[in-house]
Length: 493
Image (cartoon, rainbow, N blue to C red; front, side, top):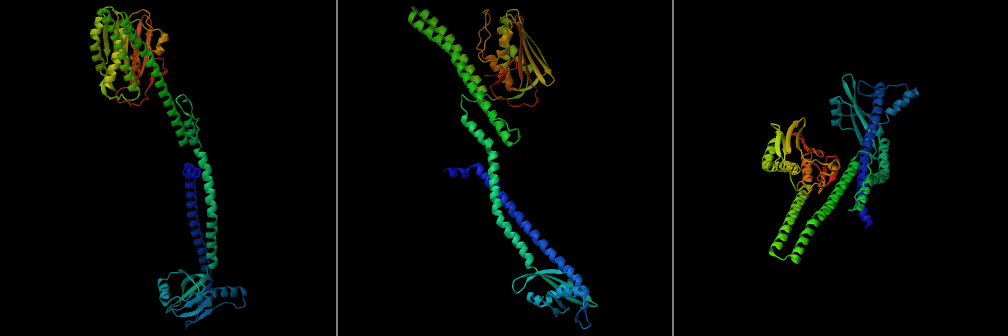
């Protein structure tokens, strides 16, 4: 079973493919080299025959009646040796195809037919042909012509080609003999390099086996090779970071829910138990039930807010972005809250740019404006002011909501966008919130690729500033759950 798994492993397949590729490459290279060697050998023999042909023209003459005459100094050993070599494999024929003279070795190769002789003489071109003798040995034949006055003679010279062919065949046999050794060497190299190449992948697999909900801080060090494996390691590390964030969010959500729901549930239960045990009249029982309903309503608000945040962070809240005018949206929200501001004797006014075009989800932008304005009105006393400013900047649309309320101490500013965080209310003024509104505001800003910050001075007021990209500017997706607070740090919601 282990051997079977090895055969199916990626490392084995990479090594096998590398060995097959090298074997096919070497085989193709061997065929090419064999063909080149064969042509080189044949060309060398042709060059020898051309040299012999040039020598033959200096020794060969014809009598008026067509008789072949060899003209050379018989006492000169060198000339005699040359002529004897030329006469070893040759044939001379007239225009009618009649053989005038030939060597016995050429006769074993076989004479050309009269038609072939006529073809060569008519073309006036030199031709080469490989023919075997009676023993099957190959001969390279040069077929040409000589002119003597107005007569043409067919002259063929030959050379035994067996030795040259044997060189080519031995090369092919030797190459094929060492090819398996080359293939095995390629397989061994492929196995070695595949092991080195797959080592980071194996490390990623081992690290993935060690991951658990309580152990998500493991990371692979980059190889700094800037290749595909480094890309895999980087992607794996980012995935671990996302998992860590998700588990942290889940743990934080569980902690927040248990903490925030425990108090109202305990209060409701206590009120109802006290009413059952101590109520002496219908009015006392009704009062206890009314108090329990108030706490139940608050509990319902917390649950609805938590569900909305959970959907937003999990990507279930899909933004429907269209080109909108932030000034127009702000004017509508201001109009809805003017009565509430008047009831509290707060002056609500605005300075809105004529056109502030953004690419946004109108519902979420309205929720952002409502939450910020509601907070400003909630913590601003009678006679105070709340101002909404929308202005265009180079590369951004800026929204500012400022109030003249009691302000926030500096130590609380870094935590304003944390879930369930509420500034301690020592004066007893203002309404008690859920601590979820600003958390959701931060998510909306981040989802629109914007930024939010807050400035506040105790006793003088608070100012929230939101910057959003104008319409037409490129938008990039964000990771859910990573909110930037006023202090610039990240907090997981």
